[in-house]
Length: 429
Image (spheres, rainbow, N blue to C red):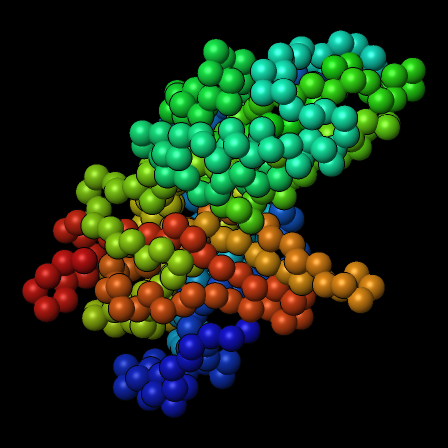
């Protein structure tokens, strides 16, 4: 790992000055990303029902917030400060399980309503709903489809920024594959490649923060043994996501099914300005691609970092982090750490949190060729006792040399409860 470190001697001296027991394995940056815990984290996946004309994966914000609150009551963050060995609550230490088997994530993934919205699979050689080839696209094969100049012209001249959105990529030959998939719809309006239609559908969909509109070479029949390579048509599709999209997510270039080869072209991506939104009752710092590397203690000599959660289901939503923060405070108050070496009179309260999208880039060798894989892992909520200044947002990446991985952060924001937290120099966090 490569982090900016403080001097160990300075930290040790600070702990001694506070008359606290000092750990032999003092970690000078406890809120640095614990990459060892993330090595085996599976990448969130999804299944697109491409034989249908639409697919709806529902998301309910209120239910997600309620699930987070109840989840934290039974799976709280419990950090023993590395400098002191003193737990923050009676649960003692934990490994900060990032969420492989997190019941919060699994509850959302297994929502019965999600299953109910899955279309039925078509039988081999069944006809599929088609669109008129209004742009005279060359459908001969996947290569001619991708190279078709009409597709490129349509994508390049499409609306670059529907109201409430900004464009994140244009005219690529891959559709987005990211976390927090919310469904798709085939576009069959009088405008054809209709970006405004996709934006309206995203606006009407709970949790939708981005959409991808693109051409896809699709079969007129479901390929099968008796129809291995049916005629193609130029489909237009928009997919919906509860995360941010960029060019690195546009990795789905199509694939083979029997002898039929699908392909993607004219792919445009749009992100909502709702990403990193403000919350009522909170101050907010926009950190972009950096995250906090806070001091060890706040001004009341309270260990400031309370731990983190990695959320791999639902939609990127700072309200989930706010719910986790409140629930952590409630847990700490109900389960004080007295009797376990904690001499603090008051329970440690969560008064601030960070929220960001975590992306992992790995490089592997395939023969003599290096292969780079970019994957969104989830939304991270990191909890703190204090609303720290933006000058501490100096952590821009984390590295795990063992698996040749680099972790980066995007849409990073830091929130602090207005009027809450320890009083320092006469002001609240």
